Structures are given as C-alpha cells and as structure tokens.
Length: 502
Image (spheres, rainbow, N blue to C red):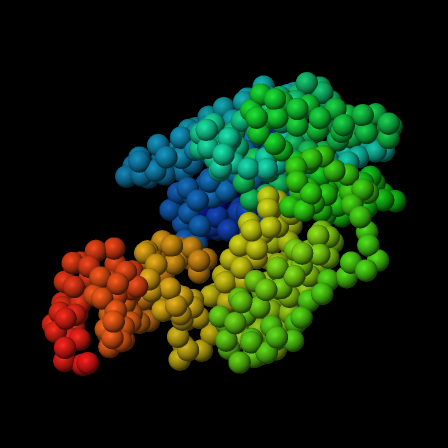
C-alpha cells in the first residue's frame, strides 16, 4: 500500500510521515510513504507513484483538500482518501464524505486514531483488491504479457437530445462508467481500467487489454468494444465511440505512443461520426501536411494584438478541420500553440504557469473532443488562459476586456448578458465582471448601458427612425424601458434629445 500525505504545514506533514513509518514496522503492507505541500504538488506526485491512500488536510493554499478530492474522484476514482480537519470544519467534512472520502481524522491527531483509520483502509483494500480493475499505467506497462493494446472509449453526447432525457451529464457519465466496468469485470482477467490523468470528464474511459497471444487480445478488444457499443445503443439509445491502439511492447510503441494512436482513432469521430476505429485504419495521406499560417499569428503577437491572435487561431482551426484528417489537425494545433509559446519567450514575456509540458498534456486531452465546435472552443479557451496568465505590460488594457468591449459595441442590439459575453470570451462571468470593475472602473451593465445610449443618440439624429425602432436597434424590447433609461443616463428623454439636436 502506497500512502501520500498532503499538508501545507511542514511540522504536521513530517509528524504524520513519522507515524506512518512507525506503523510500517507492524503493517508490512505499507510499501512507500511520500508527502506533498498542497493539492497541486500532490497531483504531481500521483503522476509518479501508484498511490493507494491519500491523507490530506482541508485548508491549504493553491489547491485545498476539497478541490484535490474532486480531482482525485475524477482521475483516480478508486483511490482511498482520509481527510484531516479541525473541529470547525464539519461542513467541509460532510462535503468530503459525500464526494468519496473514505474516512476523516480530527485535529489534534492521536496516534491510535490515526493507526485505526489506516488499518480500516488497508482492510478495505485487501477485500477489494482481488476484484480491483483500476491500474496505474506503470503497472500495465510492467505487466509481463507479450501482447497489449489500449482502448479509449467515450459517449458521443452527454448534454443534448437523448442524453438530456436520461438526466444530468453526471448521470450519463455514471451510467457509461458502470457499463464499461461491468463489461470489463465479466472478462475476469486480461483487462484493466487505467488511471488517466489526461481525461476531461469521468466518462472518458481508458482500458488496457493484455494476453498471451495476439489473437486472444484482438478477440477481447472486439468483444469489449462491441458489447459496450451495443448496450449503449440498444438500452440507453446513446452512441459511444472507441479508439484502439496498435501493439505495445519492448520492440513496439510505448504507452504514450499507444495513447496517441488510440486518441487519434477516437478523434476521427469529429469527421466520420461515432464508431469503433483502429489506429492502423486511419488514413495516412502523403499530402496531409498541416497548412498553418504562423506569420499572421506571429505578427499579431509581436504587436500585442491579442484579440487578433484569437481570431487567427479560430481561422486556422476552420482550415485544419476542413482537411478532415486527424493527423493534420493535431499537428496543426500543436504548431500554432508552440508558435504562441515561442513568441512569448522571444519577447521575454513571462509565460506564467504555462510550460511545454502543459501543452503536451493539453494535446492529450484534446483527443476527447466530441465534435469540431467543442475542439475549437477548447483550443481557444487554452490560448485565452495562456495569454491571461502571461505577465503582460500593465499599461495595456486586458485583451479579454478589450475583446469583450468590441463584441458588445458590434452587437449592441442583442440581449447581452454577463454570462453570454463571458462564455464567448472563454472566461467565467465573475472573472469578466471583475475585469470591468478593476480595469474599466465601471460595471458590465454600466458599460453596456453607455454603449447603447451612445448608439441611440446617433440613431436619434437620423430622420425617419421612430423611437420604438431605436429602442429595438439598441437591445431594448420595451420602448418605455428604453425611454426611462435614456432619460436617467442623458438627462432628458429621447424626444427632447431629438428636438434639440436635429
């Protein structure tokens, strides 16, 4: 049993580690014990070790225990967790238990209570280990079987149509996860559910299949994917897609390459619709080289026109998607995002927390895109966050705010809301609201009203346009509401304004 201890206070962290080491002498099942200072560091540790038990404090900087628990529930659903908390955190304890925590310990921590909690977890692991399908990727890589393949599986839709009738996206995800698990359990052996740190939702399933012969593994892969696909279509009336890798082994591609192969096969659904696809069946066109124009992107970056940067990326995505070739699409996305990163470094702009490794992980997540629109939105959201986290000269107005203002000015007649504009800018409503207050010195609604009133004043100077028509042209469904707002903002009503200016 491998244990990870997470606490931002070094004294508590080291004290708990000492307790575990003392228990290790009596409980030989404990293999390793490692520590981390917060949730972000803990996730990094989980990438390196196959952790069986997470012991975490609730209150920590950067990422607290509840946020960490949410990530663990998504990425490592079978991991056991113990929450450490003070007496005044009972509501947090309830939240943690509802979201999968195995146990909790109150501070100050007593040795006997700590040992009892760990023993309870150990006994639970022993009872379930025989039937545990969840493997760390390292275990699958090291498993002595001459033939191995990966399967990536995912529902094609969890939010619209039939999925909406079933219930929430969480319900659809849970049902798909349950179906995959039950099918894998029926196989008894030769299949495992791999812990996947690069999935975007809990229904993104990564399976490892292994065996003593190529024929046996291929039969198992076909049986698993066809059973899941058939059950989803017939019982749930939902479609699902699967991507299958080539062989994995010492003289063959490693796990990372197999993930890429299966991911590309899965991503083919954005061009060809749902289905079960093998990586070796993906068309490899000699002419399918990505047509990416990095010159315009570079020019926009160098002049600091971040609105244009996003426009260029959106335009490039349209071109790449039209080529209908997964390899060209993914290579093209990687080229212009690497161009973005390179220019940031060239201009000696601190790229913040974003690194090339972050880009690599993003590319791994991108293969789960269910359609072209979702993929484009993901790329634009990543680029927006990258630019937002960069240390840009404070004299420049935030490019997100600038882009939001430009959109509002061009679409003044639409019923604009903070949530709608925030979604289009790939930021949360709270973040956009904060940008308006901090950088523009006014609220979102105040700016929108000012823009509408300026446009209304321009329209009122044109002869022949009635006041109710002006109201509609600047986004007001009621001319009375428009007249009242105009008077409050300008000082007198629209009729008086027209008479004084015409």
